[in-house]
Length: 279
Image 1 (cartoon, rainbow, N blue to C red):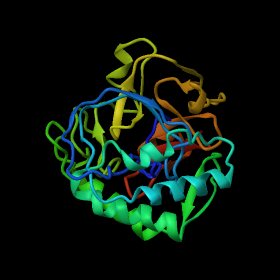
Image 2: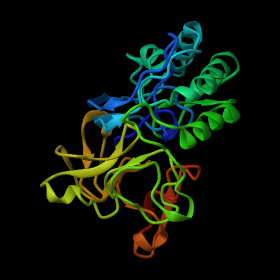
Image 3: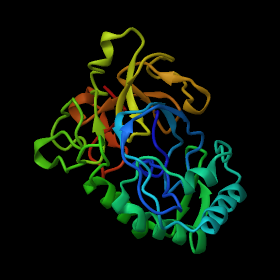
Image 4: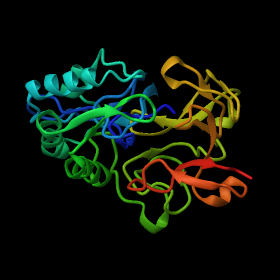
């Protein structure tokens, strides 16, 4: 999974995102560049680690304002103390203080979540071997709610809530109703891998935009085989690296799973997830 870190996304978030800049004023969106390896992902909040991949065009600029750098230092120290095997905290503080993808109007909610994580939050290792923060669920959900309903900077487009009409967050591809309820820029369909399948070896996966983008190469792990996004071992198109570190089929509903069950990555974002026990 080439996801964001703060469970979006918080995972999610896997919505996930970066953190607000401590300087005033938000940056405007623009053409997204190539995303960097996310390693274990910043902040945790139940998130899986992130790999950037290609940034989405018009990604929202940094929001600016609000975060106390001391809180970022404390939070990163907590994550380091948890000593989770798949965490890469080399950019933890910079990610915390200088996020990408957070709408400017969500700066206050982000700062509140970081302050909670630094003061009363507790760090432990999640099932994927990266740190997660417990004790700040309400604050984390406030950030997620803001991001899902937020408006991007110039070129970023409006997030919007897809609701019953499907889709969500703009982009060029519409997914089935409820699959993604907003907050993501959807430029490909992970279930059937369109339009990525027009390029040999390309795969649709989550990016740091946050959104769904085509990644052109390096996607070689086969269905059911071991995968490791932190070390560049990505699944072929139509599959994502699941919690068991094996390639699982993308899905929007049980009907995509051939008799198996579609388990959502984050029910707050939609039904998008991976198949378990496929028939």
